[in-house]
Image (cartoon, rainbow, N blue to C red; front, side):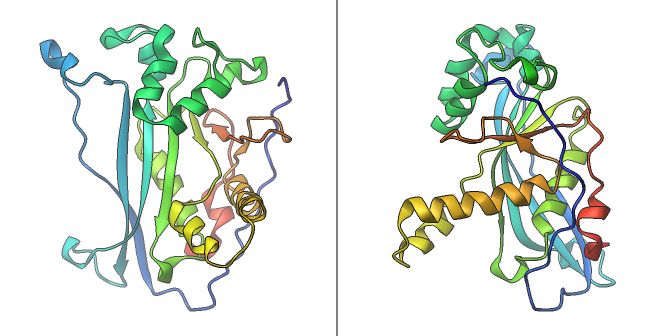
Length: 246
């Protein structure tokens, strides 16, 4: 499991959509979230592991009014305040980290059990600096309307989302590159064997997320793969990755 963590060199996203990109600008809009405080803090059992959604928006050229905003996609993610859990804040404890993740989703529990042991400690010493005590954003999905795919807008949106999270200076972003359920259902109709389809989809997603500076945090031959990046590293600038969007 022990492996050297390296950062891939900057590379540009290759535009796949043949249609001209409409003129305008993009934004990421975080949806409202709530946190109970004071004596009410235990009304939400999983205070420090919470699901969130952000809209990916487009404004036509020369339009800045919110009523002109078009929602063209969304980012769904789980925010894990691991630093508060580690310090036993809000009644949480690092000892029940697995259980807390499992209460949210099976996928989150798989991530937790892969990277952390039963006591909540990091399994791979090479990752200790990155995920030992910092907070985590686990990407559940990035979705774009068909018209807007193939331009690299998802990468732009993810970079923008990270920039909106105030604590994310020494924390980590993770994703299990498996593709969306809708995409998997579409490919089932083609008759492609599931294992072949999954391997091809995963390889494309790994290359996609590596553009942002993510690397594999699980062994390359592992059946279950996790990509991650630590925001404390000097990461590729988004202007280098999708220069056509600037």
